[in-house]
Image 1 (spheres, rainbow over the protein chains, first blue to last red):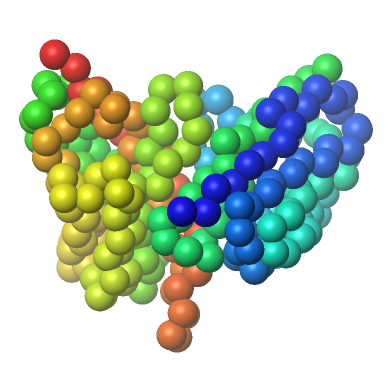
Image 2: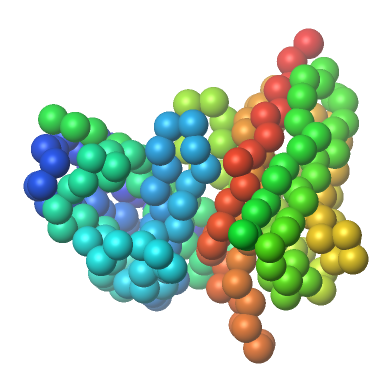
Length: 107
Length: 123
């Protein structure tokens, strides 16, 4: 099973600042990594698939990069609605696995 | 509008059974793979099971293998999860989610999610 480790667990930032979230895989997942956003009481939403492709309707301030074992989600300028929990997920191998999440909170 | 609506959750005793349903609308259900993902209260996301559009490919997490069965009825635009021998650790919100397929490929990530249904396993 591929283990995904997200860091930091919590990121405290102000609106307008840039956020950098990390996801590290226990073995290579090539580029088969996705990112999701989840707000309290809501279902997750797909942001990025295959490491760097924005899903339909996702603003350009969200970008993904990386390959192999190290991946980054960058939010270029935080909007108030971006404060949420973010998860990464790999589809390289079964079972599909998620990281433990990074909470982006308002400083 | 693309929509996924889960139902069938509730309170069940350990060892009991429950059948979850997911009603799909607004898209060609038979062209998409489908999944169940769960989230225990206050915890992260855990993939449970996946099924391809024609039911040719079915996968389960080890934690539910032998106890849960995923199925779909493309004529009814519906996805199901039969859950048997339920345990306290199965307590979670269960989401159904769709996965895009193409000719000869399936991109196993979760493009759209329903709002979830809560399953509580407790005596």
